[in-house]
Length: 272
Image (cartoon, rainbow, N blue to C red):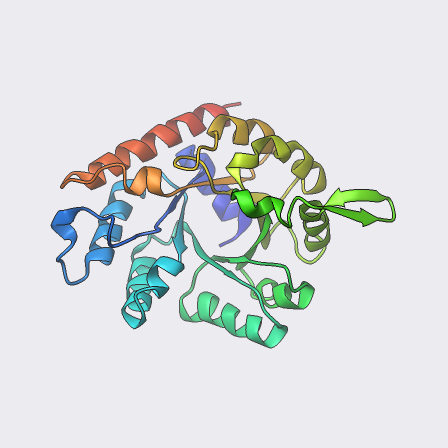
């Protein structure tokens, strides 16, 4: 998907909501538990209930890989069910030596046909480059994440010629040189919203994928205040707070209601 197509969706729907399909079979409604394809049936209902509200779906591959071969089938079924207009993200956090990353890129961009994949940049440029070389696809590189462990490495001071910076700042500045605003995004956690002003000084025009709103306690208002640029430049992911908004037979209706609440707030922020 092109940047222009994504921006059209945001403007048309007045929403920059990404819904995370981090589906845990142990948390889906009990009436679906015994279904032979329970996870897909749950995902299908969530997608049907929210597809007119959100612009993107993010599939956290760990929840599917944990099911073995069946999980990969369900992931592919789910991806194929998502309407073509939506920006699809494989939250797989891949990144390895070049020839291995090339195979990961083939797996998620050609075999499974996701629009984007999350990347861990620790191994450097040759581990990220293969994901940037496929036209129409996006690498979403980890920048400043929402977890408490981000302080262990990401927020450590690194001494440079011009002074010291946090490691995540070095990563943002360096990785931004490898791609463009048309094929490269960055993960920045909603629980670090006040750091977005610094982040925007380094990467003013790139899209940010923002997890951490909802169950993790991140503020949509603060994320938007500090992170939005003139093109919006945000995909705010909400997972559990939407997909598990209800646990009964009306779970999809409850999910829709939760998604609408987020999108309505986003609509206020998108108005000129």
